Length: 477
Image 1 (cartoon, helix red, strand yellow):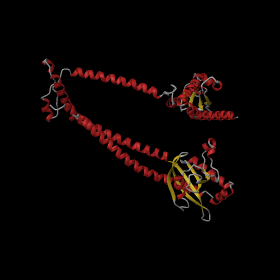
Image 2: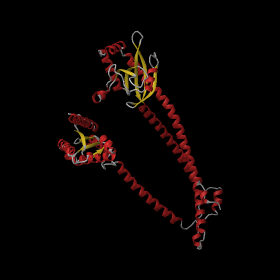
Image 3: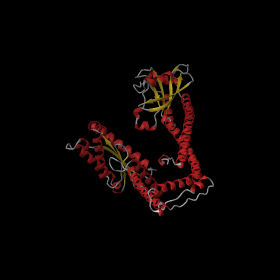
Image 4: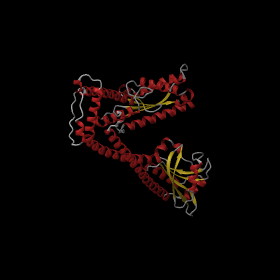
C-alpha cells in the first residue's frame, strides 16, 4: 500500500495554485505600475519645479540682488524677493526655495548663500534657519552634493534635476536654474527642493490602491473557481478518500463487525467517482469525531478571542510606564472632537509635559536609569493630575486631558507640579535619575476661538516650550 503521508490533498493543490497565481499577478502588476507611475510622477514634479523656477526667476531683479551681495546691504527689491520666496514656501508643497552661488567642490565652505524662503512656522519657531546674505555654508553640503550644484553653473536655459541627501534636511529632489544679470553675465543658481519622501508617499499610495483592486478581483475569481471545484470535484473526492482511509485504519485488528458498518457517500456525478464509491464504507464513529473536532475548534476560537482582547488592551498601553500611549491619546482626542461637535462640550484643557536632561541621564548612567527617570516623572504627573487621563505620547513627552477638579484648578495643579519637581531637583539625597526635571505648558479650550482639540494642543505645546526656555535662562543665570 502506498504511504498515505505522501499524498497531497487536491484541494490544497488547487488553493496553492490560485494563491501563487494571485501573488505573481499582484507582484508583476505592482512592479510595472510602480515603475510607470514613478516615472510619470517624477515628470510631473519636474514640470511643477520648472514652473516655480521660471515664476520666481521672472520676479527677481538679478542686478539689484548682485549689488546687494556686493554691498552686503539688503535693498527694498531684495526684501520683496524675500517676501515672494516666503510666500511660495508657505503656499506650495516644497521644502526649500533659495538662491546660492556654488564656489567649489571642497568638503567645506563650498557654497555661498544669497537668499532663501522661510515659512511662517520657521520665522516664528526656528528663526535661526534664516540664511545670511553672502554667508558660507560650512559643512552643510557634502563635496558630492556641492559638485552637483557646481556642474549646473552657467547652464543657460537648461534646468538641472538631481536627488540629494543631507543629514540636516533629508532627501530632496532638486531643480536648478542659472540666473543672469541684464548684461548676460552669470550670477547665481535659483533652486527649488521637493521632498522625495512626499513623492514616494504619493507613489506608495497609488500602488497600494492598484494592488488592492488587483487583490480584490483575484480573490473574487479565486472564490468563484474554488466554489465550483469544491462542489464538483474536491468535495466528492475528499469524502471518498476520508471514508476509505478512516475505515482502513479502524478495521485493523477490529474484532467487532458492528464497528465496520459504513454509510456510502452519495455521488451525483456520473463519472469514475460513482464507481469508486461502491468500494467505500463509513465508520459509526464519524459523528463523534466530528463533534470532538467541532468542540476543539470552539476552544481554539475562544482562546483566539481572549488573545485578541489582550492584544487590543496592550496596543493602547505604554509598555514602560503602564499608562495610555499615543494611540490611546488619538482615540481620546477623537472622542472629545465628537463631543464638541455633537454636544457642545467645552470643559476640558490640554497639558503638555516635556522631560529635561533625559539624553544626559541616558548617556551618563545608561538607558535603564533613563527609563527609571521617565517612570518617576510619569508618577509625579499622574499623582498631581489624578482626576485626568495622562498619556505618554513620545519618548519624554506626556499629554494630560484636563478634566473635573484638574480642569477647575488647572493653574493650581500646574504650580503644585512645578513645586514637586523643584523639591526633587533640590533633594541631594536622591539619585540623579530620581531628581527629575520637566517643562510644562497648559491651555483650556476657548469656544470663542478654538474649533478643535489641535488648537488647544498647539497652544499648550507652545506654552510648554516657553516654560522650557525660561527654565534654561534661569539655569544659565
